[in-house]
Image (cartoon, rainbow, N blue to C red; front, side, top):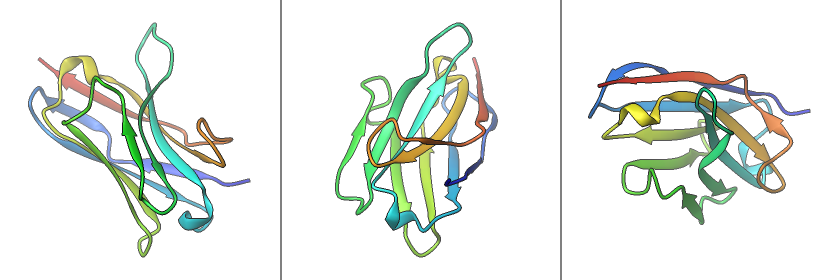
Length: 117
């Protein structure tokens, strides 16, 4: 069982930036696919961004394309989500996810991101 630990959430004004981090208990290159999902109150969990284990392929939700960037640092064994130009509608609990395909079997505990208007 792989554990995923997120950090970096918080409160930010609209237009601001945050960077989320996810550290897995296994070596990151062993996890074929990783992603960030989010869930806002009263809404279903949705895919925000995904990345393959070699970092060669990424994909983004239309709502964050051009504003968010997903990346992996093999040496630091960490996955990141750089979030720029944040909007109030980005407010949600953000979850790190990983596995052989998306959504993977492994989930983090979630980190709250709140964007004020």
